[in-house]
Length: 360
Ligand SMILES: [Zn+2]
Image (cartoon, rainbow, N blue to C red):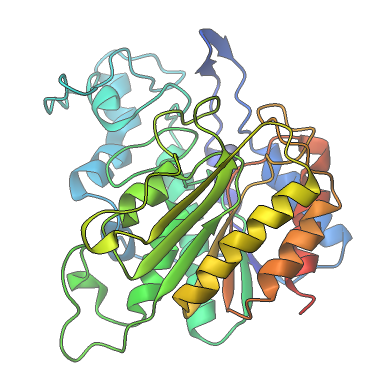
């Protein structure tokens, strides 16, 4: 198993986020990946390698061009227009009947984001690109025959939609990797969403994305919602009580060609290991029925009982078991790091999941 990691993640270090009306120190901090890295090294899980440098094309296949252009220059334009140098954070959000496109330097953050938990600082875009490169490198390794790769991504990605950021996420690393796996070596320059493969392209490679972060992967769901070639399955806290609140319900099943290819398992508070594993078995059965060629695992560890923003009750023992059951699918698997904020336990839980995944 190969871990892909870039030190560029540290370029993204937000000074604050808004949570429940309070300006707080962010939960999503650079030391998160350092804790995991230290645990991997301590456990002798290697090798760890830097990402390859990809151009924008595999990212443009998932995110809109105007959105990417915004992210690339958001901070510089914001500061030049008089925005706070600490970080880009919108004052007004585009919502429902008030969503006209308006993208002045101080306004665009409210057009392209859906909450106040994803500040942009000077290094955010570079860090996000490095995370996407890590996921793409892992995907490339699977295409080259590896059975398991771990993209130690930061910032995380599963809340980022095609043209919306939020929830600590800017580029959807898992979705970018899943689409890359889907098209394989097919010319990415013409692979924008919604277009059919060219006649001489490689045979279809169906891909499943399993999201085991505590929070619903609303961005990944949106990106693949109308597609039948990428199955999205998410096990998460019921959005009635937990973020992202406005998506992630069980009746969101996909639309158009994608009808039936989106599967949500919203769960109650206090979920135990046994309860989680029983639901995981249902999710894995659906993935097995889909018969994908590759699996992308959006791995968050905020399902841990001690997580400061989660309310499940999983113990460290759960993660090797979760990994072991996923491994029984027998699929080449790319693990993409998402959330997890119980800093002291993060490394052990990540090592546990990876150990479980390598057992079979
Ligand atoms: Zn999460």
